[in-house]
Amino acid sequence: MGKSKTRIFRKGINDQITKITRESAIVKASSHLNNGLTSDAKSLITMFGLSAEELLEAGTNYEAIVSIKNIFEG
Image 1 (cartoon, rainbow, N blue to C red):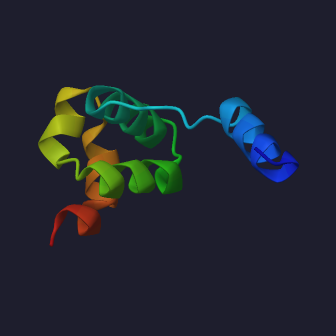
Image 2: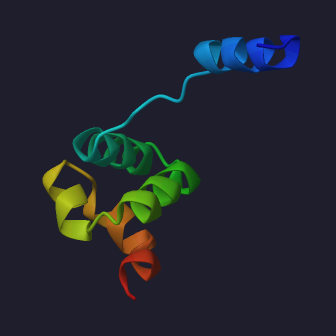
């Protein structure tokens, strides 16, 4: 194996992508919405296709859900 492939493999070992489950995505999105970080929450909601009901069950404020209702309609 050449030097370039060795460097690429070593970089891949050190820069592993973290895995996130649907349940942890719901909890994180709920916490982001409650703290006012809507852009971070929107990315998780669209990536996992989360529903408003799931987020409300996780403890998200109703007002936060209403403020981004355009994501859920559609």
